[in-house]
Length: 366
Ligand SMILES: *Cc1c(COP(=O)(O)O)cnc(C)c1O
Image (tube, rainbow, N blue to C red; front, side, top):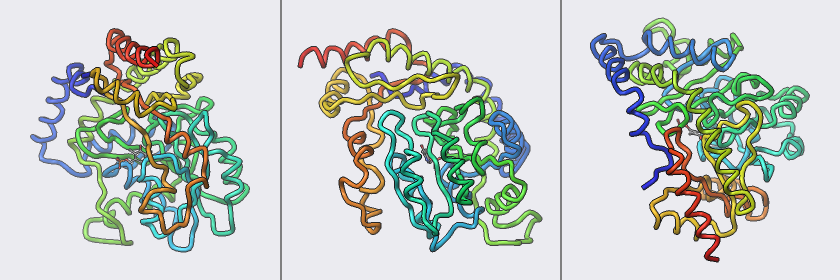
């Protein structure tokens, strides 16, 4: 079976170093808010091009705490995309605000800035922009709208660590950038972990408090916070794997380019952009015969996945918002046709050729 991403194969590249790093933490007896976490915060912030990093428990918490730090709550509206992982919309509702979903661009799969503009009301307080599959969203237009209307911009960069927009690190352009180190992300921990970056002193101070029970001095609590910290074992693992990130991204881009050459004219393929503007967390094609193709791939030992089959505005959990089928037609159509193919950094040319051949054989038989 060719998996979406082969984490076991990856392990062969850094097994000894990882075991040593984990052992070091265990022997140190320091597990929460220690040196490894601090080092990871500094290194990730520098890599992204932001002043501060704040390690948190996962990407979802990164988003939730960011909304909290911006003072967003009941009565506020937050604009975002319906074509994303559920967490993006979930955090808006969980903080007590109202998610406002706007349609996407059919080629980029990110929010259409023209639709964002139409959705801004007097209640709008923030935009959560998602860089889906690792492709940079149109930040210039979004930032201009935000500036004009005094809105916070929170970047959901959970799938886009290392992605650049006009040379700048994704996550450093809005007020706050949120990252996930879920195991299958381009930089994955061996469990849950996440990171927030910002260059704003005030937001930084508030986020440090929010992730740790509102406390900077032990047993003194200046506000109501949460328990959402990145632990030392995950930080040690991430510090080792981080050294491979750029190399892994380059490999993903090469694989994407190769898929594009071989699948041209057969299915709709994604654009490969300039330097790191798309880091291919997922490589997604589109075809109206998506479901049948998936079955054929599965039968021939190739994994594939649908990100995402149901846009957020049509999810049962968001029924109370009153959206109907047809409201956001581009997202709805893409959700019916999209399919992600294997693209891990260890995918060999032979494996990739096999995937391509199954796809070609499927369409030739039609
Ligand atoms: C993975 C992901 C999240 C959530 O991250 P977790 O670490 O799993 O909580 C949020 N948004 C997007 C777009 C994601 O891909």
